[in-house]
Every structure is written in C-alpha cells, then in structure tokens.
Length: 246
Ligand code: ARG
Image (cartoon, rainbow, N blue to C red; front, side):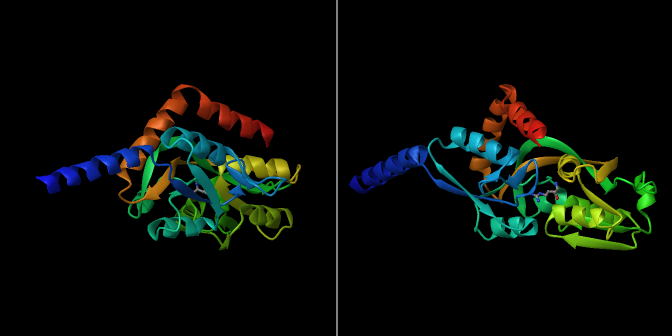
C-alpha cells in the first residue's frame, strides 16, 4: 500500500512536471527559401516560418527555448527521424511520400509551383514548353519531383540553393527553374528585372510543420495553436509582412 502510494505520488509529481516543463526545441530549416526562410542582414535566420514557429511554440510551451538549426532541405526529414531535430519548418509540403517517415501538423499555407525564366525568354510560356529544356530545381523538393516525373527535360540540374539555380537562368546556363510560387516571386524581385515567372503549375500542395513520427501530443498542441493563430489573424499578418517586405 505504501509502495503504491509513493508510486502514485511520483506519477502525480512527474505529470505535474511535464505540464510545466519548458523543453528546448531544436527546429530545423533551410534558409534558401525567401520569404519563408532566408538569412537576414545580421546573419540571422528570418522569415514567415521563423515567426510562425515562434508564435506556435509561445502557445504550446511558453518560455521554452526555440533553437533554429540550418541544414540542407533534403537533410530535414532524416534529421527528424534520427532525433537530431525536434521540429522542421521549411515551407515543406505535406506529401504522402513524406508522411511515411514524419508526422505533419495541419496546413498553414497553400502553394503552387512556378516556372521562372530569363526576362527576355519568349520561348517558354507554359509547362509544355519545358520539354527538351534544361531545368533547374532545388534538390529533393516537390519542384524536383514534379519535373522529374512529369517533364521530358533535356536535363534536370539539382541545386542546394534555389537562388543558385535562378542565377544560372540569368547567366544563360539554364532555360528555366521550377520552384514554389512565393520564393519564385521573391527571386524575381531580387534579380531586379532579369527574370520573370511565366506560369504556375497547380500542384495542390500545402505547407505544414513536420515532426518525428508518433508526436501525437505535440502535434495536437501545435494544431490548436495554429488554429488560434489563424482565427486571430496572426498567420495572415506574418505572411503579409514578409510578402510585402520582399
Ligand atoms: N515546398 C517545397 C517542398 O516541400 C519546397 C520547400 C523548400 N524549402 C526550403 N526551405 N528550402 O518540397
């Protein structure tokens, strides 16, 4: 009886602790994807995703430390499955293939793919015009998968950084880049008139936060926070802030 009592006591104490716990969270991202994540002028990771994860975690675990860890985009899922990071937020599309290895929260943004070409390119106007062309993508992204599976390209060059692909379009080494619509628009701006977006490809993708498989409790708490931040207009305000800042 005494043993049971102390067991129950330990249980109550540890439950209480868990409820109050301020965990540290390591959040992986790949800041090559403005306006969702990029390195700002102070060398800090900034963007829509940084503000969203900070707002979400401030609700889920107030006072907890949120550390951003920078890595290649295609390293994010392996880092979640091996426990190197706790959370990934990277404009990551919640695809069925990825759902095999990770859990996703509810969606926070809807995206399409976009075709970006040199400003003086008159040849490529639709996705059909990509056939036989040299196309750049960011390695391991949905743009990469789309082009690999659907376009009869002369070559598909896979880059770590979307901007490097865009610069190769400017330099005439690539005919087009296929990348998500929001970063495509940001790259058009940052190349100052040297590139343009000619078409969107409706890939029906949504961005969500990725977690290690089996993160049911954390995922539920994050979904509640996301719902709250959507309802009170915070998510919209964050998106608008960075879309117009770019
Ligand atoms: N939405 C695309 C995908 O999930 C591209 C994301 C790239 N994100 C980044 N931070 N580099 O594949």
